[in-house]
Image (cartoon, rainbow over all chains, first blue to last red; front, side):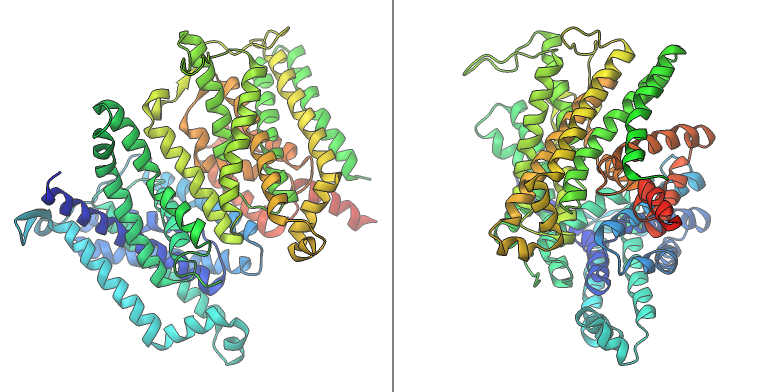
Length: 305
Length: 327
């Protein structure tokens, strides 16, 4: 395999990783602050993608589409927090799983109802549709580079938000002692709604950005949700840093596994069997990674509990 | 006065009575629906051992359901094509015999549960939910990308597998088999819950430290419960695949895990007959609402949401509680 192809795949893995981070960051924040497992996070990803596709279809502006994805997902997130999620904080995890599973059913079928079963397409803006030439002569799609950049900027912003702003201080305080910050006069239920909407907005943005590469369809969120769970298990629940490292690990493993493993098996097997075994194993590679992390660190790389 | 044993008896009789009436009226479709209820209830009873008794919220039970399905699919497809499964080091041929397929399904499901459980039970709470979900998804993607047994398209079996002395193609006789399996497993699960193992398992759910203090290992109790649970769910999977004469990765998907969990919840968690009530209600809803609207999952979602938020204890729970309130 040529070095150029390898670098291209590494970039693809990074792009996949930063998108997973946008999903995982919201999930891990929501779990860390509210102690809630939210299966409906994938639905918010889908809401973002559909909002973007609808607005892009109506106005033709990609920037407006991204704004719409952020807004729609944040509003949907705040709405389900106020109506449903709020009642689940002091319930056990089983109730949370079931109620958010019910939300998935409602969101998915509702979207199918409004938009139909056929996938929508979100076009990459013309300025970004071509390749750019990187140092060393590598041709790489500009849009995917933009995704990596946006993901990194948001990751940086999120770290700053958590570490340096007042709302970040409150979020961290909420993670460590709920009663205490309520006693200090912080409106905890408003804080919860804000955190939930923030996580939802990140998921919606990820949905819109990825929706332009793949198609926008019902059920697009759940595979990503499950990968985000793998990311969180690897990184450690509640840790943004863990989510970042875990997301990049999962993104790179998944992408590189699919490219490299068939070749590795090809060195000592006949080609067709090597492709079959290699691609089957590649589809399992991130779960094997997860199992490995669990064996040595059951609470994840950066988990504390 | 409605007491839980009465409800249980009614639920137990509901299935054979429905199938019997349908048989008299010559309605094979209703018999097949009832068979589906019995098989899905069986899967729910399996999950309920882990979920209800052990408090293990597994979102990956479709893995075992699918493994059972593929045990049937792989054995029967080899028997169908007369190609042995393997020749070295010893000859293994496919089979069309249900008892053998069930045995293989139960063993395969149990072994998979042992492997997945041994890893997942190192953690607890939310980690456990996410990890079981992830392992389930791993098998799903494996089944899709493994081309030997149909990949994404799944495997079709032309003729339903046989059971000595019965004609399994006759809907009523196949229902009898599925119901017998359900009755046997219900009996087993009832005994299990009352046995020292079941009591220790419940205790481990309620207070793991105390269980440890009296010298029992919660990890081992849970692992054993998870293995039994997986094996039963795999048996249900084998029967389900035989009912449809078809197995595909859909049986392994996370939606399947969610549905098996819904059977347990709609009926009532931890109640022996909860999954029977839940599966019956689910199929009934699927049939009635599915006939009214293509988007019946919305209503299912709303119902599930209401049950979780307001009617904890599911169907049996609300029936029993309402009666208790009258006393």
